[in-house]
Length: 77
Image (cartoon, rainbow, N blue to C red):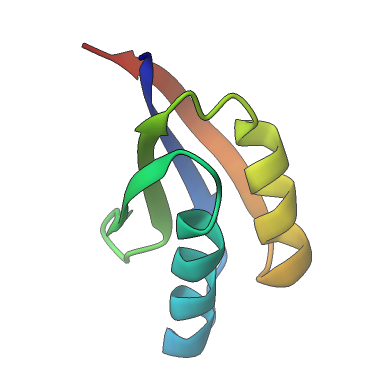
């Protein structure tokens, strides 16, 4: 199955916000890896099988955590 890596930058004010953002990302169908990235840990890297709704994930994070935008979507071998 096609694997994708999605990177979303999210404005997270506190540790509780980071935990909530990670939980939201991990609960999406097909996701098997979620990690914080970036110099100030403000990017979420999501790896999974067929995460075709990357924009929907970014919108959910925007509604429930804070400002979020899609940085990249790429296919993995």
